[in-house]
Length: 592
Image 1 (cartoon, rainbow, N blue to C red):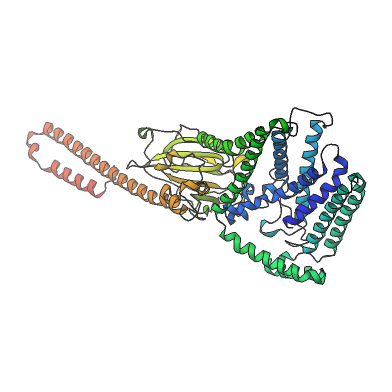
Image 2: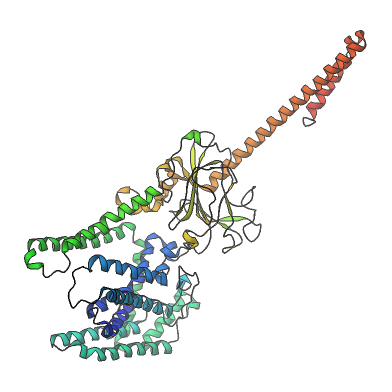
């Protein structure tokens, strides 16, 4: 269902409910609030800003996906709480009039309208197709269960668009005529109730009679068949217009969206908030100039409203981001406090490599589900067990090398995060980061050794951020010591003065991060060479010890022979024995 249907049905529901709540809220406010509540779940359409992977939820993150958190009970409760916060900030005042309703009742009415609008939106979406999202997680974050849509209509339904739009504007016109004719609006309430009820009954009959949306045939075939059905039931005068409107709309949509860049969103956002702030500033100046005349007109001072907007939208967001990053900064350590890492191993799997090792289901090992710079903004790797699903949930995560823990905290969205600082033999500093952990038995300041268990595979904050459990793993260069642990490189593309755009973001990441698998593979080889070198040195030392022991034993025999007979001192026999012993040890260095 399109945003037009959602808005019109929300407005109609507002007209129908207002007679029951007219003591607490005016009709225009009730209609506008319900329309807004019916539209807000679709605000997650902006997740296209983060990429199609987030929009279509291929990254398994329902908080930043279309038809994710905002299309659930959790999202509706969030919008309701947000609406109540705005009410207390911008409309509530201590100054009460006799006719004002009790604050508690007004709060309950506002909350009820937002809940009704949100539930209406979810109900309408459940009647439609599932798309690539595979249904709706209606009770997220309380439950991950998905509920499939009924496919009673397609992604657009012109019959319903015309029906709801016509009914809504008919109600608006009736109330406008009544207001101009000075007819009490209460006399029209029953007529409007009949109009709204009749509209929803006709819509239900239309859906009952429709052949449904054949989603199983694929998007193109389903759209073609659904379009043919729609045009067949429309009046002749509307067929051509509807056909052209649908074709033009779809072409514009698919031609525009891929070309929309981050800067376009930022410009639009700046224009909206800039215009709002400018309007409130002018309103405040006019109020201050004509305060005596306007003081009785405003129940809430425009000065208060302006200052609150400045505080909430201009001061608190950057301050909150700064505080969040400050709290997530790693410890600053001296180089001599960090153990030297002579070799690296993989964070999951067996000692000999990730290809083997228990993964929660079998011993077939692990794989990289999302690679470094795939997509272009990903600064690490996502590791999954080959058992599939969440079979790897709770499986151990190991330190990749000797090092010292500089950060170990439970962070919002990320879950348990661990950052370990390593010092390479040449003095170079790198960091290994382990995110979305379920458990984390180490703390900041701990020294960890290679292959030491440092956590378990999880699903993010509260084990609810991601549907599929996995380990997000990064290797950061030493220059990243001044960045917060929760830093995500793509945020730089949203900051106009950073100089980083989606085009050059991969180069920026490549200059600050290392490909984890390539780095470990290179330093495992160095480790194996070091081991072989140590083994050779050990064996040579053992051979030397054997020679010394052989020489010592020969010297003892010489002394005994000298005591037995003085003329035996010149015999070469002991020397022959020594030479034979020396050659034998040389041929078999491991004799001792």
